[in-house]
Image (cartoon, rainbow, N blue to C red; front, side, top):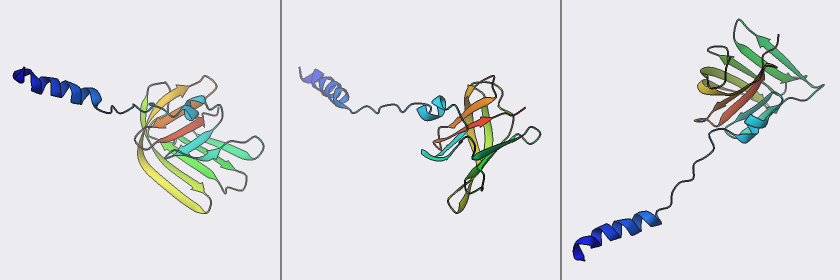
Length: 138
């Protein structure tokens, strides 16, 4: 019995260990969004609203822009390559204004977690907890 004691002790210790619950790979708010939207480090910083916001898109620069009419809140996402399919991984630089402060975050690694034929693209950077929903305008 003594020779099995260390094994039994290990089994009991491991059985009582608190296992980390795995966080969802993508923020559910990003995957459910149907309009242009930006969330940085888990906080919503921009949300599209009909009649008070403008969208811009530059295919050559792979740049998405969204802002309210007085530009007191906006974001610009410049991608290393155009997001064209779900599962694609791209790098991007992000600039946004919230309140009176303009902030930037460069070299973020985004995964395309949603791509619709309407041009709506959902991007998620898990390491930074940053998500963007952008629209490719024709």
